Image 1: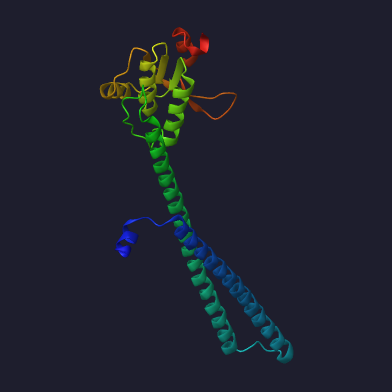
Image 2: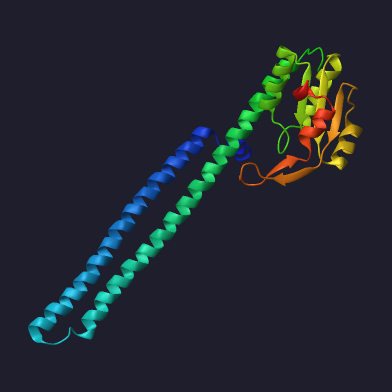
Amino acid sequence: MGDLYGKVMPASKKQINDKTEYIKKQTDKLDKKIENIKSEVSNAKEQLFRQQEDHFNKTGQKINELQIAELRKHVDDIEKSVHNLTNSVNKLSNSLHLMDLQEKKIFRSTSESVWAHIFHDTIQGSEWLKNKTFYPGRWAAGYPFLYALYRSLNDFQPKSILELGLGQTTRMIGQYAAYQKECRHIVTEHDSEWIDIFKKGFELSSNTEILKLDIEKKSYYETEPSTAYVDFTERLKEKNSILYQ
């Protein structure tokens, strides 16, 4: 049973850290070996040059080809060892990188699960959040943000809310705005198709208004172009939004 559990469950953070530390130590050992072998190659080449020079100075003749071939073979063998060890180091480095990615993935998954429990415990018995169905993650807001948003709405009870982008947060703010009769909620969104899909799946009260705005790439003070709403300020002035009351 224990073996089966280990196969289906992800490694613990301690196991990953231990494995990572082991790989780091092995990589350091191989790095030292490579440096030693490189030094040995350099010494062998220098020895070959010295032998040729000494032999020539003593006899006036070049060292014989057999001796040169033996020394060259020795150098070639050492260089092959360096090449093999370098490949081993690269493999260990790749393993270390994969372990690091796995650790980060597990941490994100664990953190999100913890915040999911915190969020669901917090909204239990909420007077205004009746529809508790959310689809967090990917491009949508995660549970940590949904928790912070709920606490902000529930504790501070704002009367005017400007939201940029239609999504999971709209499902929460829309319910708050419907409950708080004096609240005015404006949501800006550029995608007409997404607006239609959202409206079919979630009903908003008259206190929430979706403001359709196109987007464009725009530079500010010679910065790199960034995405911005077209006529954002002017359209909000028309709505007498919270920015211009």
